[in-house]
Amino acid sequence: MSRKQKIVIGMSGGVDSSVAALLLKQQGFEVAGLFMKNWEDDDSDEYCSSRQDLVDAVAVADRIGIDIEAVNFSAEYKERVFSEFLSEYKAGRTPNPDVLCNAEIKFKAFLDHAINLGADRIATGHYAQVREVDGLHQLLKAEDGTKDQSYFLHRLNQQQLSKTLFPLGTLYKREVREIARREGLPNHDKKDSTGICFIGERPFREFLNRYLPGNPGDIVTPEGRRVGRHMGLTFYTLGQRQGLGIGGSRDGDGEAWYVAEKDMANNRLVVVQGHDHPRLLSDQLTAVNVSWVSGEPPRTHWVYGAKTRYRQRDSACSLARADREGCVVDFSENQWAVTPGQSVVIYESRVCLGGGIIESAREAPPALPLDGGCPPEALPGN
Image (cartoon, rainbow, N blue to C red; front, side, top):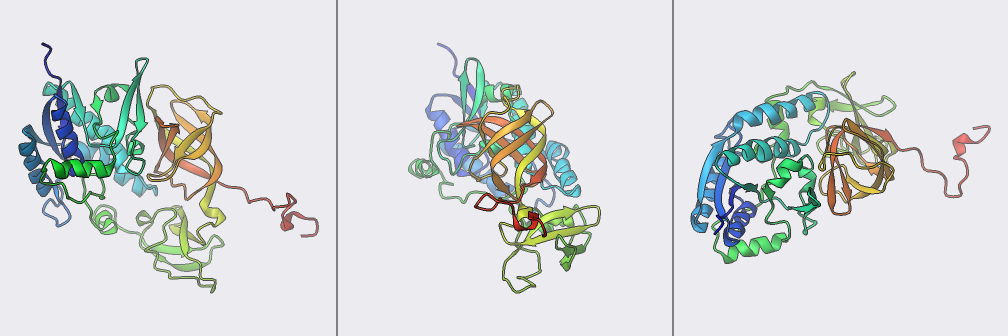
């Protein structure tokens, strides 16, 4: 008889990874749990739940009947993820630490540790799928489109995917909750975590201020009119509406203010009024630090779908350029508040092809009049 495959699964104490571990055990694998502790700063803080999460993970492992180990990757996290996180914010960009955390911690440090423990493969509670076609491993969207996490996994490579299982990829969240309840898992009704990867659900501005002191400056309109003061450009992101401290319209039209630009050179926050203001719309972006799942760039001038933020619907696009250094993405429809530092992820139907870090976006040209004629300001005499 061939031996059982050994699967080491990352267990966070949440319901998703718990059910994933249970399903693997029921499928006949030799399963071991691994709880990752990746944050030590202010560990006694009211927003840090790692101790309770470990208690929950151990309780689930005991219920399922598997061993579990706790491993501290906080040094790796600080070096590979958090330092980059701070560097990006300092440069005026808005990074996505979950993307980097997956690539550097969950599917690198964790994978290496699991292989050293004798694992054949690793598993996580992510909502995604892996499929092998002609020797190539593809990353697919989850069946549950409302929970799909392929956006955060787009930097995974062939070696990582070949060693990874996603047991929840074909399930809907409601089914996962029902399995946990039916099987008597002690955390079956535990609330999902929505905080920054491994840092918790702290007030974000307060947390960031510990590491990046604010540098107050003016909030201005594109014309240079001063409308308020900001606490430091670090604490704002493009498209932000809440927390600007400038109330409604100063001109009486009642439209809300949105962040349109961070002028780092002059320490000014540029804001505009109206959700659909032209300064918030882009029809093209350039991305760098790209990663292609297959190892090869996709072909250019072909119709794909793309997301510039999580939970956004796929937007039709083509790649004007795609290589190992970067890509240029042209969109069929204008995109709202495309944000440098965030990830653009490219899809061909359900298959995630990869993506990169948004470096810049081109402001969309003004819409043409409905009759196809010239806009009034372009007519002679205007």
